Length: 156
Image 1 (tube, rainbow, N blue to C red):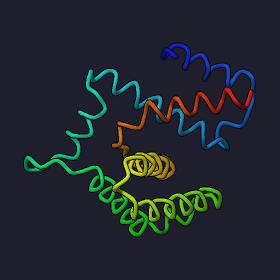
Image 2 (cartoon, rainbow, N blue to C red):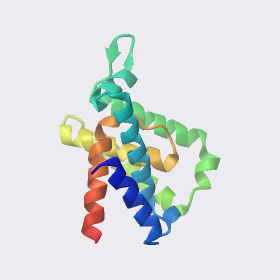
Image 3 (cartoon, rainbow, N blue to C red):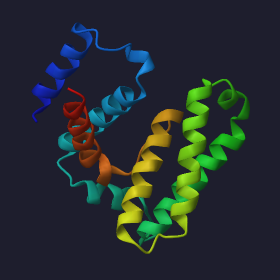
Image 4 (cartoon, rainbow, N blue to C red):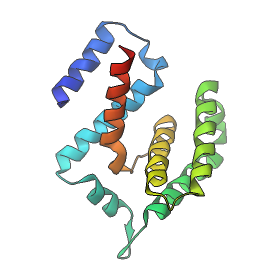
C-alpha cells in the first residue's frame, strides 16, 4: 500500500465517522507508525541500519536482548520519574500499559528465541506510543503497519 493510499484511508476514516479518533488507540498507534515509516523512507536507510546507529556506543553495538532490556529499563525509569503524570492517564491506558509491561517481563525470560525478541520489540513500541516516548525499534515498524492494515481489512 502506497503512502497516498494510506493518506486516503485516513481521510476516509474521518469522513465516514467510523469511530471517535481520540478513543481509538489502535489508530493513534497506526498514525505514529505511519509517520515513522515515512521518516525511514526519507532517510534512505534500512531499519536495521537505523537501529544499529541508535544502539551503538564506543564501537559496541548492543545485542537484540540488550536493546530490549535497555528500552524496558527506560520505560520503567520514566514511569517511576513521572508517577504524577502517569497517574492522570485514563484508566484504560494504565491497564493497557500494565498488561503490556507484564508481557515484557514474561518475554525477558525467553529472549534467546528470535520470535520472542520480535514480539518484545513490538510490545515496547506499543508502550512507547501510549507514553508518548521516542520509538527506536525501527525494525518492527513496517510489519506493525501491515498487521494494522490486515486487522482493519478483517473488521470490514
